[in-house]
Length: 304
Length: 270
Image (cartoon, rainbow over all chains, first blue to last red; front, top):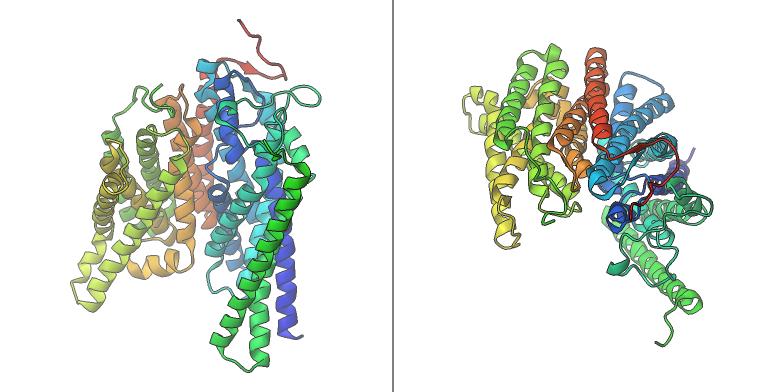
C-alpha cells in the first residue's frame, strides 16, 4: 500500500484517540475537581461552605497526566520488548497507570480534607471517596490508553525519533494542558458559581463561595461531570483532536507538496511552517468572530 | 494565619537529619545497584525512595511559605535541577575518562560528582531566586540546594536501579537513551511534590505528610519495578506501599473532625 496513505490513516487514528482522550480527561478532572476549580473547592470550607466535592489535588493536570501516561508508556514499552502483543501491552500499561492514578487521587482527598478538617469543620465523606473513585480511575484509564496508543502510533508510524516513554511524557503533558485550559472554563466559573450571573468572572469577594446544593440534594463531583459531559468534555476532545490532526496534517502537506515540487527537506519544512501559520491565522479570526458573537448574544457587557 | 499553606507545625524529626539520611541511603543504593546488579531493583530502588522522602520533607518546609499553588512548581524545579545535575555528572566523568584519559577509577565516583554538581546548581538557582527575582523567603537558598540534591539523587538512584549500575556504559543505554529517565523525572517529581501538596492546610501534620511521602516513595519504586518486569521487587514494593498507605489513611481518619458515610451536612452550631 502507498506509505502516504498508511501515514494518513495512522494520523487519523491518533487524532481520533486524542479526541476521546481529551474528552475523558476533562470529565475525569471534573469528577475530582482537579486543577483550576480545585482552589475554589479548597477555599470553600474557609468561607463556611461545607461541601461534598472530591478534592483531587494532584498538582496540575499536565504534571499528573504526564505521570500516568509515562507509567503506562514505559510499562507497555517494556512488555513489548519481551514480545507481548501490542494491544495487550498497551492495556496492561494503562491499567498500571490507572492504579497509580487511584492511589494518588485517594491520598489527595484525605490529605486536603483532613488538612483543614478541624479548623473549619469539614468532615471526611467516605461515601464520596468510594463512589467517585470508579469514575475517576475509569475515565483516567480511557484517557491514558488513548494517549499511549497515540504515542505508540507516533513512534512506529509517524516517524517520531524519540523512544516511547519520552513521547508518552510529552503527550501526557499535552493532554493535561489542553484539558486544563479548555475544559476547566466550563466547570470552574460556570458550574461552581451558578448562582452568580454568567459572564461576570469570579470577583475575589466571591471566591470560595461555591454552590453546594445540586438540582436534587447536595452537589458532588459526579453532578459536575454530568453537567460538563454536554459541552465541556466534547469540546476539549475536539480541541485536542484538532491540534494533533492539524499539526500532523501540516507536516504531511509539506511532505506531499515538497515531493511534487521535487524540493529537499528545507523546502518541505518551509511549506509546513507556512501552512501552520495559515492555520493559526484562520483559527485566530474564527475565535474573534465567535467571541464577538457570544458577547453580543449572551454577555451582560451592555453599556453600564 | 501568616502561612496559608501550613507546614510550620511541630516537626517529628529535624529536617537536616532526614536530608542526611536520605543522601546517605540513596548513594548507598546506587553502589549496591552497581556492585550487585541482581538485587539492583530490590535494594537500589528501595534506597532511592529515601531520596524522594527527604525531598518531600524539604518541599514541605519551603512550600509552607506559599498558599499551596506553588508546590507542584517547586517539585518540578527540584527535578529540573536534579536531572541536569545527574546527566552532567554521568557525562562529565565519562568525557574525562574517554577524551582526557583520566584513570577509569573516577567512573566509580559518579554518584559523588552528581551530588556535588547538584549542590552547586541548587545554590546558584537559590541565589538567583533571591537576587534578581526577589523572592523573600529566608530559607530559599538552603532549600533550593537541598531540593536540587534530592532531585539528582532520586533520578540517579532510580535510573541506576533500573539499568543495574551507574557506570556510563550501563546507564546511558540502559536508562537515558531508551527514555526511562523521563519516567524517573516525572515519577520521582510527583513523589517529591505530592505529599505536601496533598496534605497542606491549617491542620497539616508532619506525621501525615511523612507517611504519605513514604507511601509515594514506595509507589515510585513499585512503578520502576513493574517497568523492569521484576516480580519479587514488584510484590515487595506493593506490600510496603500498602502498609504505609494504610497507615496514612488510618491517621487521616483519626485526625478528621468527623467521618460520614452518608450524604448529610453537619449541623451549624451558631
